Structure formats: C-alpha cells, structure tokens
Image 1 (tube, rainbow, N blue to C red):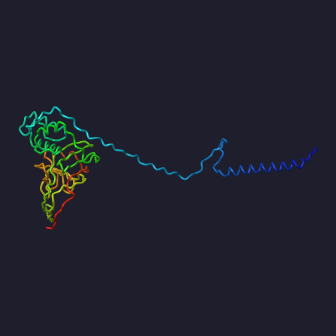
Image 2 (cartoon, rainbow, N blue to C red; image 1 turned 90 degrees about the horizontal axis):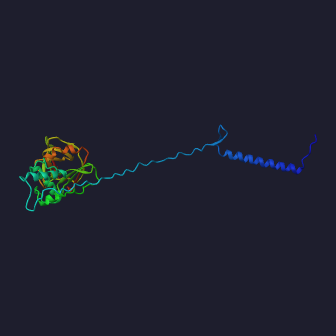
Length: 306
C-alpha cells in the first residue's frame, strides 16, 4: 500500500480546525452547565424545569362592603279625611265617625291612639299630642284645622341619626317625642316626658340605705343600649316604674299614669301605659338608644353616708 504524505500546510490547517471544534464543544458544555435544570425527557425531548424562586406572598384584601341605607318611606297623603273648619276642634264626645277616621289615620302614621273605636279618650289625646309636638303646635291634644291639615299631609321628620343602626330608639328631649325605627323605617312614634331639670334627694339602696344623694333630674344626651327589662312594677329608689326597659344607670323607658306634655320625670322617659304594655316586645337587649337634646351628663349635687 502506497501512503501519501500530507503536505505540511494541510497538516497545519487540520490542527487549527481540531482546536476550533474543541473550543466550540467546550463552550457548549459550559453553557449547558450554567442551566443545571436542563434534562432530557424519556422520549428524548428536552424538558426545562424552572429554577426554584422564593415564594411570592399574595395579600388578599377583604372585600369592600358598602351598605346602602334605604330612604325613609313616607306615608301617602289622606285627602279624604273629614274637613275641620277654623272654629271647630275634635275632642272628647265628638262625632264617632269623624273620630274613627282620625284614629285610623294616626294608626297609619305609626302612632297608637288606642282602639279605633270612635271614642276620643286619653290614648287618642296622647297620640295627637305627639303630632303637635313634632309640628310645633300647642299641645292641646285636640284636632283643629291645623292638626287636620298636618295629619292629612304628614311626613316623617328626618331621623336624628339617619346612618345609625337600622333598629334603634331615638329620644328627642327637645320635642318630647320618641321614635322607634325598625330596619331604618318608622315602627312607632309616641309622646314622652323626660327629666324635669329639678333637684331632688333620695336614700339608696332602697332596702338598706347607706347613701343620701341629691342630684338634678337629667336625661343625659348620648348613645346607650337596652340592658334590662322588668315585667310589671319595678320598685326602685324613687318609686315604682311600670314595665321599665333600662338603658342607662337606672334610666328607663317605662309606662306611667301621667305623661305630661312637658319634662316631668326624675330622668326616665315616660310613655303612655297602653304603649308600655308592648314596648318591650318591639326592642331587645343591645338595641341602640339615642338621646338628643338632653343634659350634658349627670349632675350629682351631693353624696353622703347615712
């Protein structure tokens, strides 16, 4: 076999080629080593596993809750109520048919004039006085032309706390009226008599007194909550309260035989007896009670040991 010698130039060229190819191979291996997650799958295809990164923390914010407070539903007008002229006023002993019409209108307006029976009694008088207090009329308890017009076109006043709890009691000391709201709507309106502002003294506790206290009769402004109902007569330091539902330091909404048109109590909110028979069924422990127009806190004048 005859072997031919490669010329020197060819050998040099081949040597350079091998060096270049080797460099590419080494460089390729080096590049693959930079990605340790590269691997061949079972079918020969290349699969790439993403590098492990620090966990990403995602903060989920609570959904924003928007409470839409419904508007106050106002009563419709009652254009068919009996007309009352300028020289007439409806009261005790008046035409039963006319009285019945106005009693029913008071019921429709969420007041309680007692039975709709055509008898203009004290319960009817209390309901009419509540309307007169709201309207700023003389508190006679009788229905004249002005009252008849107001009753025919009555609109509820703007709540004292329109954005407060849907179920709440608002005691308006200035007007001497209580409005009970249920689901933001008027449930019941009644006349009331709150603290007289007069000073008085008493011994406490009632059964075995240890303190003699003098204070001013106040119904303090503020937000409170019902916390205790007593069925029947509850005898306290200052006497008996009928069906009292307490909301602040012995102050309660309770029934009383007399509910004057002006403030007259020691601090409670008096309501008519017939309404106090069921008031406690309309409210619950924890329900809010707002007092507006009252005093700025209690006013204790003196306290001494007995």
